[in-house]
Length: 151
Image (cartoon, rainbow, N blue to C red; front, side, top):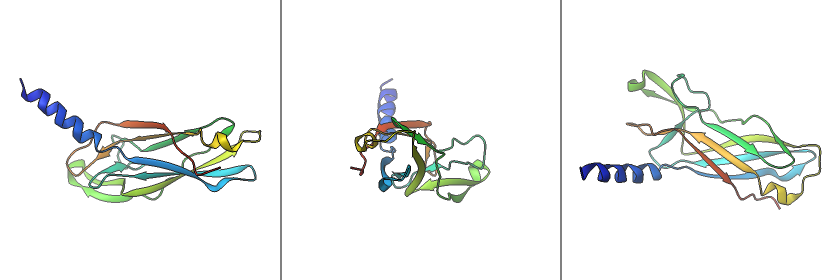
């Protein structure tokens, strides 16, 4: 019975190392008129990938990005073109993201003048399922208030 705790400990260490690093900034730096664009930068650990936002099979978990902030209205996230790779165990091609990607989210003022400090309180949520060539981990969502380059 000592094997199970050791296995669970090893599995938790492996899963902990698969969390992508997520940062964001605004383009341009703040607002141009009433709009701006949130750029979410995702860096994945080597050897791991996440499913695209539009997987080729319905059983795969899509990557999602949602943003929220006071006095701001966010549009639909715009994802880069995914890489398609062949995975015979999954029955064919899989659309995925690997390495580093930028996801762009349009944002508008919600009818009021947005103070610069409000941009620093934006919350970004990244939903994903991390996989490598032999396994997929359970779906996960990261929620954090990210530091903005806006002043």
